[in-house]
Length: 58
Image 1 (cartoon, one colour):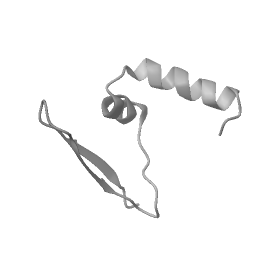
Image 2 (cartoon, one colour):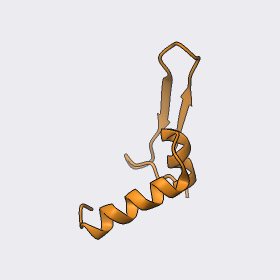
Image 3 (cartoon, helix red, strand yellow):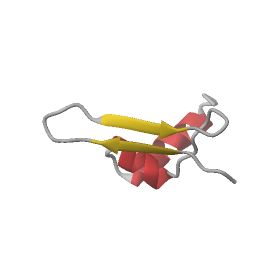
Image 4 (cartoon, one colour):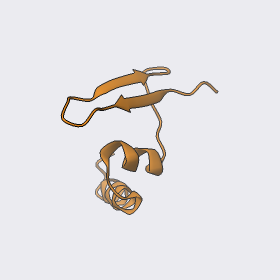
C-alpha cells in the first residue's frame, strides 16, 4: 500500500514550508503524527476525535 506524507519545515521567525504527498487525494495520519503536526499532546487529539465521532460530525 502506497503511503502519503506531510512534511513541515520551519525556521523560527519565518513562515513554515509545507509539502504533502497525497495518494488517491488523501493522507492518513496516526494520532501521534497529528499531535506532532499541530504541536499538541496525543491525548488532546484522542479526546477531540472521540468528541467528533460521539457528536456524529463525521
